[in-house]
Image 1 (cartoon, one colour):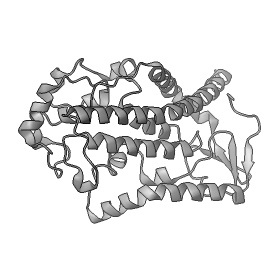
Image 2: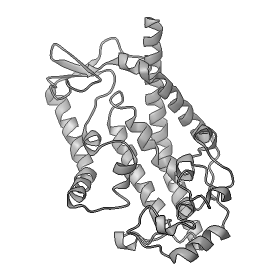
Image 3: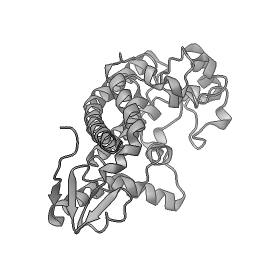
Image 4: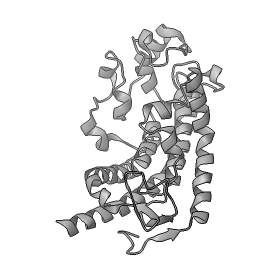
Length: 300
């Protein structure tokens, strides 16, 4: 289905409110512990990462949106939101707001298509996190977590293994001494050319692509992407040089043959889980793109 239906589906409050409440309750499994830790001044370098690194607040994650083509009766809590129109007591997202998103939608569509068709790679072994502390352990991002092997042996692991990172946003955190060791330098302009579905961070970043579609896509896709991203983040940190046993996680010892094999199994599992989510996001983007382009052609 493409474009915007001429008459939106209209949900009565008794129909849409349970959907919104179920969405909030599902989100609060993650948002409430994060907010409680923040109130206490505590940190969780695995679970808090998705709230701190990605620009999407806990309250936004917990808010359900029906998406384009669905209107809500008696929804005063949606009326103040910037992308909504309210007429005769019925609120819906304003499709005209999509026009300004055309460049981003086109870029996202291209990224999703190219990544889905790219050959997955299984030989990086999660060493991007090691490269982020190489010869810079005193400036590591998670200073409260000790290095599992200590600074010297961590550096040795990096020297003993080729770095094959293909993810721009991981590469940009490499230490100055580690960046030249990567198989290729990466810049933002390279992102679409190098992203591939075997990358744990690429699966994680589906969360960012999902929440950027709000409020024009139905919000369940964001929670699905969040939970996949959390799974990927756990794998990411288990394979890192940090000692995560205090967080209840078992390390993936990628410096060993057994650990490398385990990491590849986890990569493949995440890639399999990410594929249908990527397909769903691509379908959302295609629909929104068609609506935005139609709207632009009518106003030009």
